[in-house]
Image (cartoon, rainbow, N blue to C red):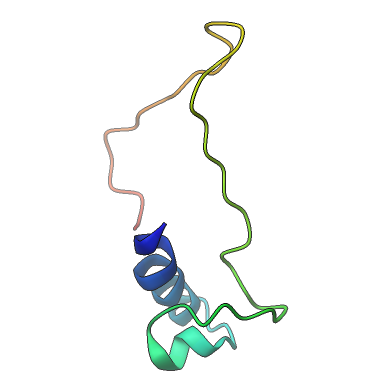
Length: 64
């Protein structure tokens, strides 16, 4: 979570020309603006029933 808020989100905000405080400070400012890109967090600890969730790994550099 630290990496997303303090590296990935600011870097992508700069790349996408977003108007967020993290563009200027390079770390998360917990903004609430419409340009905010770090809005959704998903943490999965288990899959019930077993096998319901599939993870596909792609051996290719697709970004951050």
